Amino acid sequence: MIKSLSIIFPMYNETKRLFRTFDDIEKFQKRNLIKNLEYIFVDDGSSDDSIKKVLNFFKNKKNIKYKIVKIQINSGKGNALKKGILAAKKDWILTLDTDISVSLLQLQKWIKKKSIDNNSVYFGSRNVKNSVIEFKFHRKILGIFFSILLRILFQIDIKDTQCGFKLYKKKVAKHLFNNIKDTGFVHDVEVVLLSRKFNYGIKELPVTWIHRNESKLNLYVDSFKMFYKLFIIKKNLFSFYK
Image (tube, rainbow, N blue to C red; front, top):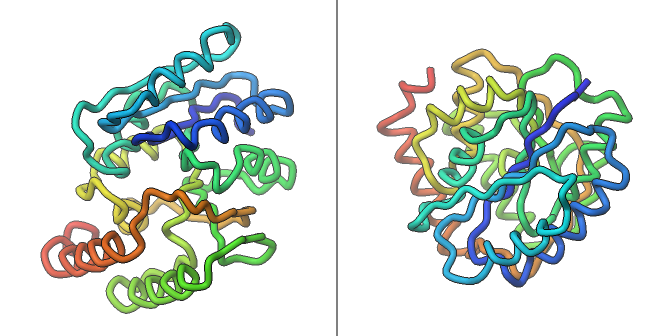
């Protein structure tokens, strides 16, 4: 049973999307099964008023614990999550995207269905049975190609490495993220490789996932970067993960 939880949101120029985050937090608080919580917002070099919006939201919510971790220069999602995880204090850590493509309430469903046991890492997966997804077709095709490439390069049979909704025991998360090298989107693949190296089990669980049009991911530029970094890992760093 999860008795305490740190919830981590990576944040980069999120002014237009934070309303979803705040709405989801309020819904989660009302239905919450976990009383010992902290919300951690990691600001990854934002140039807008994201931090101000977070401060305003929590200003009159004295019963909710939160903290802001500030990174001065934008460094990537992987590094933002690493900073947030290292700052986390609770026994379990949940990471998710600030656009709430997967709601915090998904965790409640996992708990109620007794999906959380002694396994070390839980991946929200858009490609397992009972997941409900709202996909753009081209992103679906790209995701399939990415999964095939992971199987070829690294013998990874995880159906969905890239969904941001992931749950860890604190000591496991800190161990993994202390060892990741990629600061961007490929850090998810590193989590899988490092989990294999350190013998942490991974369990994929269903999610309800909604595509957000204002995603920070540039489908073509970032996809090229991700594929390039995969080959770099294969060529130069793969021995590190064995």
